Image (cartoon, rainbow, N blue to C red; front, side, top):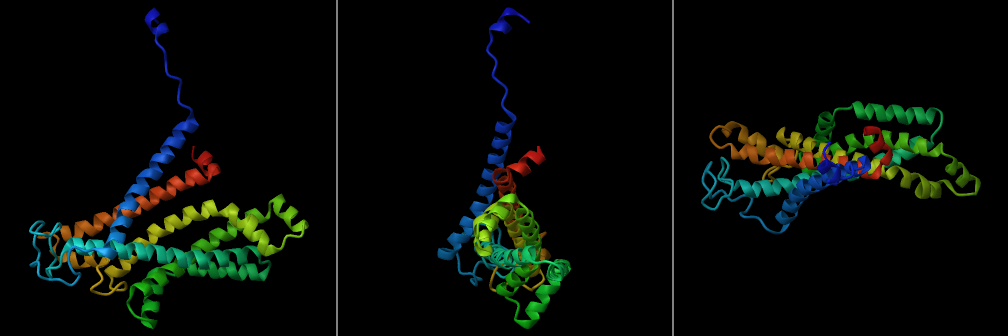
Length: 292
């Protein structure tokens, strides 16, 4: 080591916690940008669209240009208009399914956590059966009872996801109920409803929010799959899944019809998963320590 090296100031090493915090912040930021851009596209579609969804005046399978940013499909409809409409359907399906899953799942999960004996066993068995029940089969049953609509798809996905949420909530609530402060609250005369609202839910919401974010991405994929099979939003609603189904026959001559919805679908799911990953590290320090 030379004298120059001794005189050269060195930067103090970055603390591991600072590195983890920066990585978590970057993950959350990237996820918010990806998901936020598609959410913005969905919001804009409520107020403005380049063309009417049923306008077929663009010519069949026209390439990008001539007033059509992404070209047209086999019926002459503007692809960018369909992509915007599809983003709205994807966001609506994700939010609707997660809302149904949260309301039903949290309610059943809390009840199962407080139940004892055969009631607990019955609820647990019911949740296991519902988890094992295929979403596609459940969607078919609901569509047969109602019709092939976006509401039917959202209801089927929400019911399927509610069992997953309920089982998670049951585990989390039982863990919280075993803590000493719950015993102290009950000893002081706090009612069970107030205990749940004041002590149980505030302690499980970080993990629950992360799980619901993941369920949002799964719901978007499930809706696209159901629409691809004709069990989602009917025409002229341009679901990304329906766009993929319609464009598969013309992929070699007009690839934009499949690439545009496919890429946006992947970006939305990746963005939501990154948000969930960032939220997990931000809201649950214990999970962050386990991962490192």
